[in-house]
Length: 151
Image (cartoon, rainbow, N blue to C red; front, top):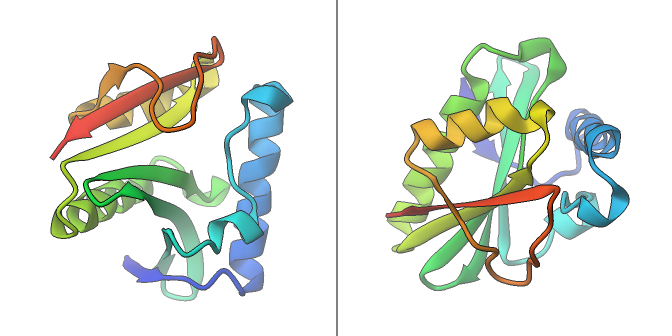
């Protein structure tokens, strides 16, 4: 698997981000969706990666800098054609390594509290993330859970 920084200009990544956003609307009320669209992912404080097997896009993930010591995982998504093949695990490992390389002391994330998000929560827990209070600009929300990993 090749994980590379992506400028979000390709049709494959546009399709995957749209799939991600659509998936959020199926499982979360609008006020609880914190997924970013293509334009929001192109902000200077966000690094976005795509994961490829040959010429096939298999997943994506992003790292947002909250401040010089704190990052946030955004837009983790595995292509629906590549679920349960280790794509998310590899992307998460890559993002944690990059956060560590940048000198962040902690890495946080927001994900859904509904059953459909259980696989994601289990993955994050296996990587040492623990539940925490809302961080940054997030507010308490029964449809969200917040997790943090000290680096």
